[in-house]
Length: 43
Image (cartoon, one colour):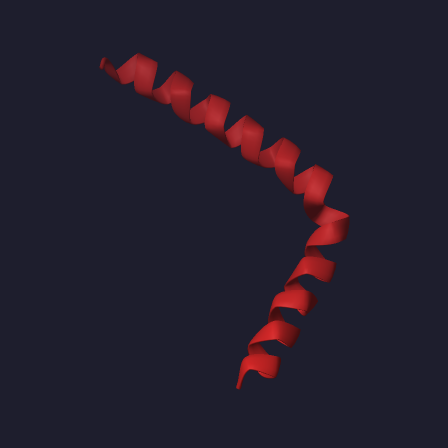
């Protein structure tokens, strides 16, 4: 794997993460509070 291919791949991954962050940004806080709740409930 050449260096330029690696960089290109990283950029693709970063773009995917950005899109996911935008998509899940609103629901993420809900998920976060849900996981916190389940952690507390398990204790």
